[in-house]
Image 1 (tube, one colour):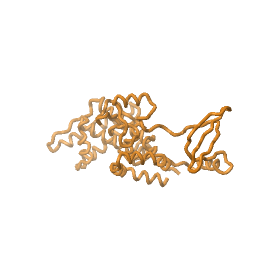
Image 2 (tube, helix red, strand yellow):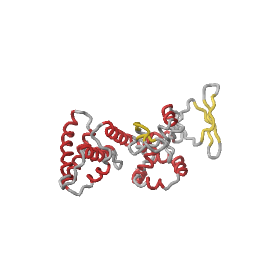
Image 3 (cartoon, rainbow, N blue to C red):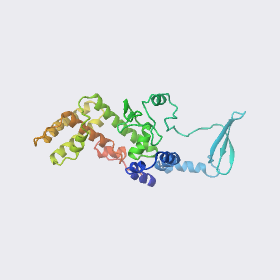
Image 4 (cartoon, one colour):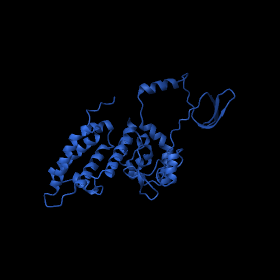
Length: 310
């Protein structure tokens, strides 16, 4: 738990630190310590570890052998013989079954996948240059081509964004593609897709989102905050019928924002611009990385108090 809290506290600072590390050195660091980081960030409860510890004690069912498997050959009796090279000597281990649990291939240039091989060969996708893990994406999860621009209407969720999560958000270990990260990716991709397929959003209004959320006018700031909360609830509500109430309230608030921003004689922003600004702020709230998904839903008023973990 202590190592996980330390690693979590470092996340906001890691992107700036990683920028200063040469690419070759960053590859080497991740290759050398990636497994250790994953282990340190994932804890197990004693009711699980006690069983394993007991099995590994003298005379237990499990025998731990540390080394590198150099060779595996079959015997005439249907068994397998492994040659395991340790730090001082090489030993032979006979087994009925050998399970390779080396995990997935994180370097997509070596991935045994017809889909990814085709996407990489055609330049639709590019392996992540800085980390050698996953593929290059923009902040919305859209695949980037060799020139660094979106290669088409293709978005990614989960492990293909591992390298981007490391350098953009400072996520390490399995937290680069765990359920919380996948949830955030899904929200971002869904919001971005809606911005493209629906005509009510103006994606050029990026600056307006910052202006509205930092508004000096207290009345305007209150209406914006309420609008963002309504959009959060609208996006988090599954049933279409259940979305009607927050949608109606949001519609009224968006028009009120336009009125408040123009009462000093300045031109009112368009309906599409305000809608995009509010939705961008709502998406940012739904993808907060500083808390667990359960804590986030509680903080956003989407469910009751999260149960404490003992």
